[in-house]
Amino acid sequence: MIQLIKQLAGDAKIVFDVGAAEGRVAEAYLGMFPNAVVYAFEPTPGLCKLKSGRRVKVVKVAAAEKSGTATLYLNLKPHTNSLLPFVKQGGALTTHSTVEVPAVSLDDFCREVGVQQIDVLKIDTQGTELQVLVGATGLFNKGAVKVVVVELQSTSIYAGQCKRGDVGKFLSHYGFVLKHERVSANHSDGVFAR
Image (cartoon, rainbow, N blue to C red; front, side, top):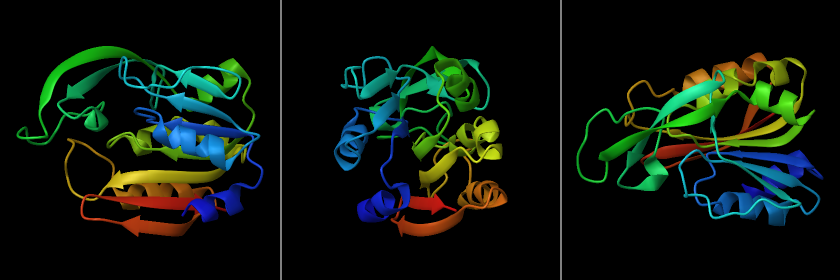
């Protein structure tokens, strides 16, 4: 999958890692694309271990459909934190608290910081991937997104989580096709491009 992303994105200059967690995927993108600036979006306070610098911009907000604030559910396993509550609490799927966090649409963010094109848009937001895409509708309308990498839940974990078919339908409306998919018991990773 890494080789395919590199092939589709070419010499990527701008990468968005939406739902960066600790920052491991963002670090991988830095290695894959030596000329890229990686914007690592992570709303969980203190979770992202990356430091902002010349090639990394840590954005401590939740990417969402609209800018404002959002409730973030903080769970026993931080990589499961989400703007959506669990369908059922128990075991590893337990929320211990919530926190209000700033939220931004990708359209608003790009307008504010002057980003004109996203070469790779990776989204792993624990059920809100479609809302993130809807918040980037202006970018998609301008053809300003080259490659989309999205991780989706295969089972119903979060209340109101988006479905694979809805994400595919949204992206196909803008001419994107699924180039590769890896499916496991709990989630699927898809790479989309025109």
